[in-house]
Image (tube, rainbow, N blue to C red; front, side, top):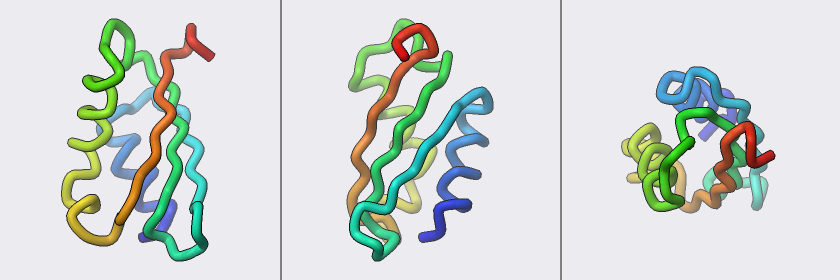
Length: 77
């Protein structure tokens, strides 16, 4: 899956997000996402992961095989 398509999905769900994506294998199906968003404020790490997983639900069923996440609020950076 193309990086731009993943970013677009994430920005749609988290409009204020600063997103860094890294293709871990060069095959566009294993990604590392570093995301900073105020939407994560007051949420546990599991809740944060659920927000991102929900935004990419369809993609995680197929074109994305693995997604590693580093999720922070602006004050945690």
